[in-house]
Length: 319
Ligand code: AHR
Image 1: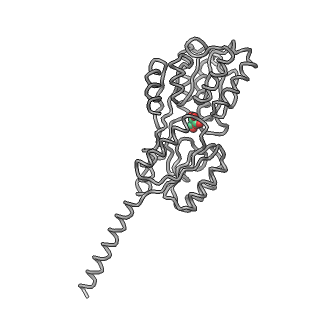
Image 2 (image 1 turned 90 degrees about the vertical axis):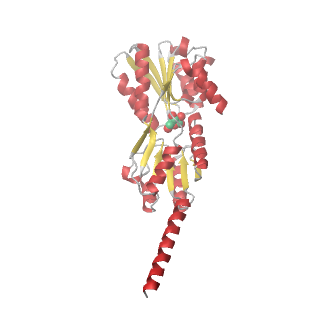
Image 3 (image 1 turned 60 degrees about the vertical axis):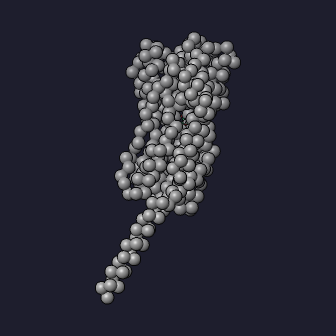
């Protein structure tokens, strides 16, 4: 009898340890609901997430949200139905996520936000891995304040309406310029984070603001919109950057380094696209029951024309 009990115990331990080994070796399946492909930064971010997943042996199920929240919500529901191990969500806008996040939670599938944030209750997601967009806006405004000694009429080009990237950057920038009575935003319009959107907004400003003769700076919520705006300025024979209207934008895409090296743009706040290693580690830690910080903030370095040629050589060789 004692022998039988001991044998059963050995078999049980063997089964348990084999299950543990299997759980460790099991390939992770992660669903990634991306906003779309509106900008150069977005493409770099998508590519970085895919490359890191491949490097780490993760089965990444990728969904392009095509700039539509309903497409992203459908992607999340499909990931839930497929019983993925975890979901990464880059939400296009802040609001309207509560119901689907609750569905993921009820299905015991952890959701990790990458890049933009949501207004939903934080208990509905594990963490958010992203830069601090408010800080980016503040950095942009602080640079402009010192470059203009606090005297500047600014035109703003906003990102997607309702996105945390646009809302927080706008707020951070506004908080800093409010400290300088001589700095004001004389026009603000939405360019949707696209090059075409930025070009159209700037063409409108050139017409409505008398060829921008009283405008001292352009603040664009991302590089693509600024690059489109610079194109519009060139077509109208208006100079920007070194010999003209100052510019400041966020992202650090390769073409922006070229624009700074060419003297067409003045300064840049860089949004690092390589969130993969941290996001996938957060997935692994969550699944292993380890604690994960509620907010993981990525740094926001600034770049200027003095190093732009070197940066451009590096990024163009890599692409
Ligand atoms: O959410 C981050 C922003 O989204 C980037 O600055 C912009 O390029 C993108 O479209």
